[in-house]
Image (cartoon, rainbow, N blue to C red; front, side):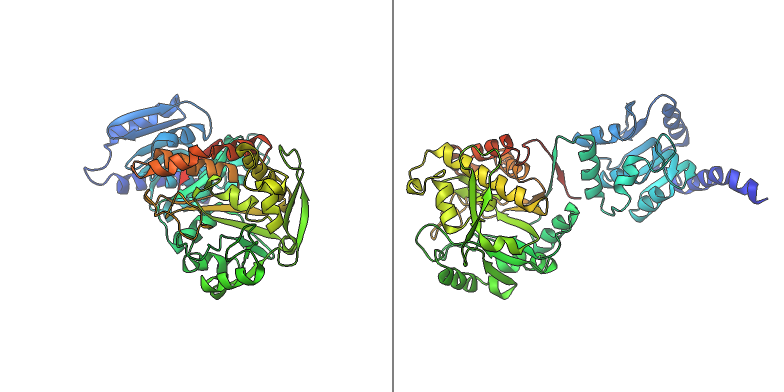
Length: 449
């Protein structure tokens, strides 16, 4: 008797669920449903949305990824041959209304139930195995410990497009959104964590505020780090810089460290275009990992400031800043050829990336985007509206995505920021950084749902 129940249970489940899923006139009619199921004889995926049917024949998860490039599953009835946890996460990300599978895994059912997506299945299995039946399907293995569909989408897309970086985006600019986008990255910064921010020149007011970054910094038990400037002002000595950190409220939320307060250390630059060595604050050696938390905005010299500038100029010692600005000649700090300066920044980025050995990640906040840097004590007021928060493990892709969002903004206030970027040839830093292997300009932007 037990054996018979096991053999027929999947069919019984299908019949019972069909009664609840299609209980009213708003749901799909049985003959339509049966016709769509029949299409799986020749198709790998069938999507019924807005009274239109789309069929796909690509294998595996490829049709789902291709569909999500320009669409979502909101309100859709989806019919799939096989649904494991990877596919289930994609359906959750795309907000599917209902899914059917010839075969579905138990973990996939759990994911769909948790997210209130109705489902039916002809067969239920414990797991989706690989083709040789020797273990999990590679995509199931990839997502087996992932609970966030946004992160799952990023991991799946990256595996299918290894030459692209993943950049996550949210239009919400709040402390909780900042924590959320860090969590979606799925990267655990361990040990002694440095949080590289811009402390802001006194008089300026656009820099990331301590109360805004506090929850994330404290989640990481991070130390806010900075280095002294190479020009006069209220951050060019350790004593004055510490006072600025105090006045701006950073010392109230976390430990702070002026990394070049006890000197500098040299980092080699592999394959640099302009410099062969980078001079950074000596305290960098005290940290096991780093979050580069940047305010994306314009910049008087670089065109724009984001992850790449914060990683290069920001981590450089006072002397190192002058060295980068002069492309290896500190006497040319204010007179260096523009592209050489931008390439020197990219070189410095490469040295820090190599030094951190992957224990680093990046977040850009696109708010209060003045054409002027936070190092300006009297910056121009922002003209472009706030856009959101972006995060990636790739600083090149991250900055490229931010620049693209500025250009694609519907806000007419973008004109002044674009003019600042173009007049300084700012995109060349991104070009140079890609050329020497800091990262890639090719990326997939995934909006957090």
